[in-house]
Image (cartoon, rainbow over all chains, first blue to last red; front, side):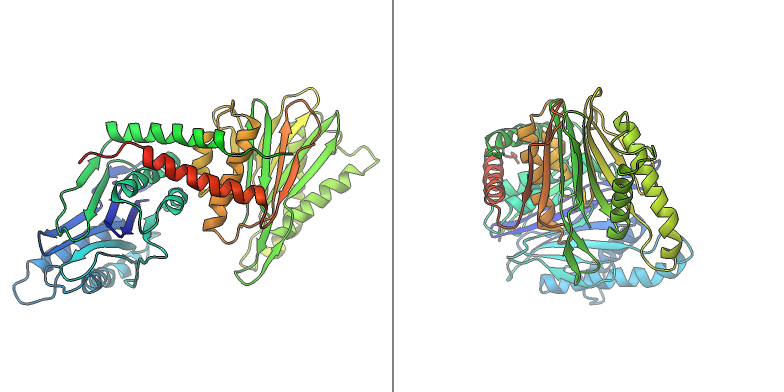
Length: 242
Length: 242
């Protein structure tokens, strides 16, 4: 499993991914699921990947190799808009699917690679997309400013309650980390380290990128304070009169 | 879908169920999923049902009819312990499964009836069980004092954070209602009214039973206060220093 979140705010975007992969409960490993394409002053693209690791790694490699092309092949450095960039991710997903899917048919695990794509290209506002395994995709908007992939249910209520487009980047960062904490408590297939990017609108660079590993002091304090805060809120909620 | 929760505390038990049933998104209905067997001073048994309505209703009817038997058939009024009572629920599940399952095999929906059974029989402490669709069952304990069925993921984190065996009945009641609110925001197949029982240890009766319907003032206030409280906690959590 996996847990990835992207939140689109008036002030920018917060993106985070876990790093656990597993094939059964007895075969765990750690792989970064966040890939950043950054050209300061021009564009910032962050990809969060969910699905079978072979599929998502292949898609990322194809995207990177196309970036090195010198024959004018459209790529993530030349895409004019984030919509166009997401189309390129979609194309790469479908290319790998065409290659791999027939060989996976005989086994129990189907081809499955999906992505959250967020960032900003100069001339546009920040945008956030989710590419499904079939290659079609949706864009976040004001009504639903966040997109999740993987084990999304445990961590969704807290985002629902806290996030609106005007939430600050600082509050959204805390909210994303609590959402991961809630998810990791309930699903062993989502695990640290957590990779987090906090992108400030129109900055066109990523100075705020951080990895939270087991035992991270800030993460532990946040988790403890959140638990204590929530218990306090409960004590102060009105009691039911029978 | 369905959402049912039972929480076992030092002070008693809180049990709650939603009332939405559906066959596809265009066929919704409301049915109470909570059944109470109460003989003040002797025993209190609360059953929360999940699964196909035909199956769960049949199980409940069989249990009720056996209670009327005058031929000495063991039933929920004569069971000596809550373990024995849960065995009777399990037996009824298996009886209905034997009857119905073969006829459901040709269709897309398999037999599926599962129950949360909580309460107290004089001479024992309060106990809480979950009966699976196969009729086997588990009992809640100090390490995991709550059991859920149905759409359990959205509402689990808040219970995880708040509930311990020493939580008061009043706080657990609030927590259960917030857990339902979180679930109903995300899954249309879980819906009001919510039936809730708050059982006080050794009382052997249920004076605290309440149905929360659409527009319930207390529920609306609780939901609004919780949202405001959570946002305040977030503002006060330590900010990440980059």
